[in-house]
Structure formats: C-alpha cells, structure tokens
Image (tube, rainbow, N blue to C red; front, side, top):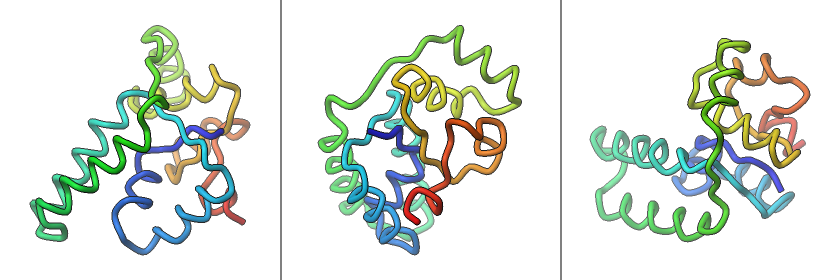
Length: 133
C-alpha cells in the first residue's frame, strides 16, 4: 500500500509523458490510497486540461469516473490538527500535508514528485523515480 499523490493519479489516468512510469508504480504496488482531498485536486487538474484544450470534456468525464471508481474505498479523512502541525513545521502546504498525515497514520510511503515534500519528509516521501527504479 502507498499513499498516491494526486499528480501520480493524473499521470496514470491522463495519457502523457509519465503515464508509463505511473503504470510501473501501479504494477509494483496496486493498492493506492489518498485523502479525500485528492478528488478536488484531480478534478481541478483535469478541468485545467479541458480549458487548455489538451483534453475533451467527454474524455475528462470518463477519466474522472475511472479514477473515482478505482479509488472507491481507498479514500480517507485526516485530522486537521495534525495537518496544521505538519504544515507549520515543514513549510509545506496544508494540501500536501494531508497526504503526509495519511501516510504517517497508515505507516506507508507517500509517492510524490513534489520536491518540497520530498525534502521536508525524507523518511516518508519517496519520489516516483525512486519508487519505480
């Protein structure tokens, strides 16, 4: 089991340069979990692609449905006070610290490409490159 960063989910469901790497991560560990926040971040990224005409709305709707179906039952609430403490101590966003908090609670790795998170939480956060190596 891993906590998957929203970008990792986007890489998996939106065909692009890092899709193969995301598929390799899924093959290595098929049980991905995330805080509930992933849905809003995922939708925001997908709608941005639609607005930039990099993705058709019909494709975006299918992608969101596929991702939400795959993550059903793998979404967690996290405690606000823990997130705030992590964010203040690390300088990372509260959004990122939701993923960190979940990884700490479940005692699993957080796979992310976010450099600030990787630097702030080296014992917990692992880069997609390292995870798939």
